[in-house]
Every structure is written in C-alpha cells, then in structure tokens.
Length: 367
Image 1 (cartoon, rainbow, N blue to C red):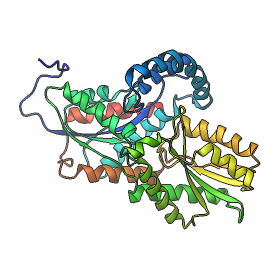
Image 2 (image 1 turned 90 degrees about the vertical axis):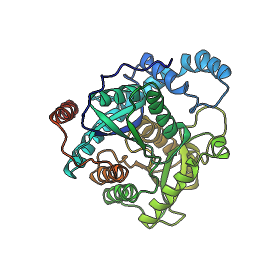
Image 3 (image 1 turned 60 degrees about the vertical axis):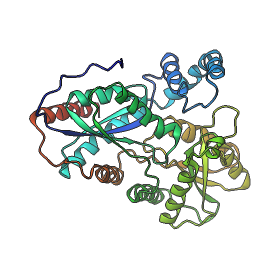
Image 4 (image 1 turned 120 degrees about the vertical axis):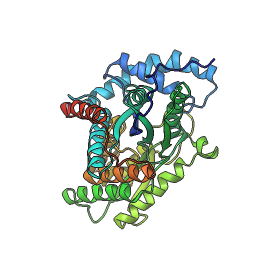
C-alpha cells in the first residue's frame, strides 16, 4: 500500500484555489561550517546534480568533500551574508512579495509563495502548506531562465515526488524556461544601460562579460539544452544593447571537480583579457535572477581580484535583476501567461485572503 502524507479531510463544495510557487536553488541556514555541510550534503547527493555512480560518489562526497569544503565555503558565505540573512533567500522573499502584489493588482486572486530545492523552505513543505490552505491548482515557476536537468528538472522532480505521496493531488503546471522571454531580456538590457549611465564605457579596451553558471560538458552531449539556451540569452541581450561580437563574451563560472565543463571558463577568461590589455570589463550574470554567493563572492570579489592581478584596470559587476520593477513585471507576465485557462479572477474567500495577508505581513517584517 502506498504511504501518503497526512492531509486535511476532503470537504465537499470547497472553492478551487490557485497558487504560484517560485523555486530557487537554496542556501545554507547560516554561514557556518555545520550549516554549509548540511546544505552541501543535500545538494550534492542529488543524482541530477552529480551524475557519478552512487557508490563511488558517496565515498568521495563523505570522505573528502564534506570534510574539507564546508569550512572554506562558510568563509565565502560569511563574506556576503547580510543582517537579514542569505542574499539569495532575502531577494527571493522580496520577489515573492512583489509578484503577489503585482498579480493582485492585475486582478489575479492567487496565492504566491516560494520554495528552495535544497534547504528551507523545502518544496514539499511549501506545497503542503499551500494545499492545507486550499490550493487545488499550482503553477511551479523555477527561477532558472535557462533549462538544465540539474536545476529545473530536479525542482520539478521534487514537486512530483511530493505529489506521488499525496492522495488528493492538486493540478500542476510548470514553467520550463524563459531564456528568450521579451520582458526578461528587456530587464537585463535595462540593467546594463542603467549601469552604463553611472559607469560610462571607455572607447577602447572594453568588454561586457556575460557569465552563466557552468555545468559538465557531457550534459550537452547527452542532450541537455542549457548551453544553447545560455547562448540564446546572450545573443538576444547583445542585440538589445546593439553590441558587436567583439564587444561581449559569453563564459561559464563555478566549475567543480576535474571533469571538463562548458567553456570558456569565466576566471581564465578574465585573466586572459587582463593580460591582453583589455583594461575595462563589466560582468553581468544573466542566469541568476537574484544575487547570491556566485555573483557576490565568486564574481565581485574573486573575479575582480583575478582580473586586476592580470593587468586589468577597472572591474564592475552589474547587479542581478533582484527587485527591479521591469523584472517583477516580466515575472508577472510570465506567470499570467501560464495561468491562462485557470479561473484566477474569481474573488477568493476570507480564509484565502487571511492566509495571504499573514504571509505578506511576515515577509514585510523581514524587509
């Protein structure tokens, strides 16, 4: 017999309700070795993230990585941690609150919440809470503009694993990717233009670096479209900005392990540009809708040091989209397009309003 999660008794005549769930990667609960170890164990144990035979990987992960990496990673997290907590979680919470408000202003009466694939709040916890509040239709919106099996697919896996243990399942829709969504591209382009207003481009020796998170090269050979979707985003962004092929460079960061990953790698690219006499670079990370460890520490701190040490002169990072109005507008448009056909414009009952208000108040208190 299947083992189902405990859930509320079915009530005849209950109004059908709709929810939107933003999903991000996740973050440790604190910038400490213990918290990072717990987070990394969950993250790196995912077979979609590391495609190595389980027995071999278990030994490597537990005997080597989890004994060495947590302390070093905790130091990096501590360098970007804020008084409000993890930057990724803070921005995701704010995006959730703003999206809830914008969809509400547009007449969509929906519950809007967020979840983390690894860490807290988990996808299962968020879905269980929404179901308890009466959600019968759920739109899952992973905050990964470019599809990858190690990001989008594993978020969907987690949601469906929860559904597999649920007796009375809600209806699901998922957003696969939005690498070429016009609003997303416009928001990226606007962020670059705004940066150029305060940091004018020099006439010579300048390059815009578009740095995406890397994945192993073999994923492309096995049919993962991530590499192509990153290049599509980069091409569309360059076209929106009127850049020539010599004005920008697409590269990939966050390489882990000894296997070949998608190239060119960001750090060696920055070093090479510095040695070649390209004195000025701006770096934007289009695959990260919210600033996090990879943008604030790996790029803004480590990347800058690499470029300057190689002879570069000025190095600027362009903030992620975070809470930009145009980005939240694009996110609302993306969600609304996937909500079509669901009756989201009917007035919710008082219980739904009270639950939504309670969450908004809790998020507002953290701003």
